[in-house]
Length: 256
Length: 337
Image (cartoon, rainbow over all chains, first blue to last red; front, side, top):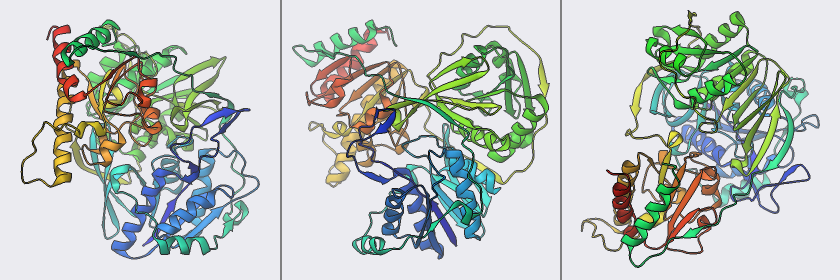
């Protein structure tokens, strides 16, 4: 099977992100592969192990995008492609959907394109569905379980009400949620291989599309309002006393 | 302005965020409700009561199960036939996906997860959390229609007006199915985390009750999980008294205490209840990112230095295994249950 996983580099989840001079900054917090995308790479590797084939990882971005690609290579992906172009500044998620679509079409013969459910920086979560729509492939989003049967996929999707069980023919787009399987840690050999890997860079003209127009206009960034709260510690002689005092306080707030 | 609001439903039952979206639509003018599915007369009636002025109803057996491609094509046709300046969706799993596809189909953009909306003439500017709410961005889209999804519980739910009705216009179901739905496994029931008014959440601390005696045939790890599950059962009892839902920290999920569906945080569910009671949760930045928009936070933790206390209105430094059962009794008494 020809498998693709689309990945992005983001600040680590522990990064204290704040706005400085109109830009989001995260001090010296490390850049990592978007945690959701690790599930996408893991799902692709599992499918390869079960059915044979190869896994290509793709990222759109600048030099920082290599961090996610190298991590995926270290996990065991076979090849990586970086789509980078000076014209891609402040590119929005919808433009990324167009670019990834063009890259997947250029690779040709792809059976499944895997995505994480969303990137933890922009938090849009729209790229998988948009890429599927552009490719004309079924969008199997928020997937927690995958089974392959010949040329069809049967998945369980995590929805508000539980799981929806869906079948579709290949090729398909699949986006993963967390309980699809813990991503493996890169092996020592994997890390060595990834550090030596030459990652080809494709420009937009090489994948045959013009610079996608930005559809979203960013007006301003603001820091999340600081929660002005002073914690009132509830104390008492025994747990019953504390509990009664606390219940009285909570009920007194009239929020229940 | 021609405002269409997608009313997300599962088997004829609307998700509450749909009514919040109707409420937002009403601040812009008249609202046309979009209802897709099968056997939905009762839902249409409810939608009028929540303020919808007119309904476009695609009621067809082919729409009985949500399938992205068929629903998106139905939506595309409706927008082409009826015209559309603003298209609002609740940020549910289906709402977000359809909004994303509609942006492609209608050659426009999509602004997801709005927590605030400003109208400047015809132009809408959205405030949306990014980096899990550590930062907010204001965004807008110059293309038409303006497609926006609205974060659940970020906008008030309109009060229903019993007996209010309006015209229902039938529209055709789209084609282009690429999937078949084989069925559902439903979650255990109870209040959903994202809709909950009250959430009682547990962390690693749930396993730390030395007074419990696990069955003898369990190994150390199994005994730890068993202990934690007794702890979460205790939280469930309190949540039931309060009419709330039970959540968990990532640490509790990763330790195997509870399923991932219960995880609150950056890589779990983003919640904003009126009251969030954090039990044995220290408050890692990833957890705080998922619940910081709760109206009131209460923390119970044995570690007085736990970061969670910095966000909490009320706190108890103590043993939650003693406090929670007593608190459940106190709530029962206070609520006259």
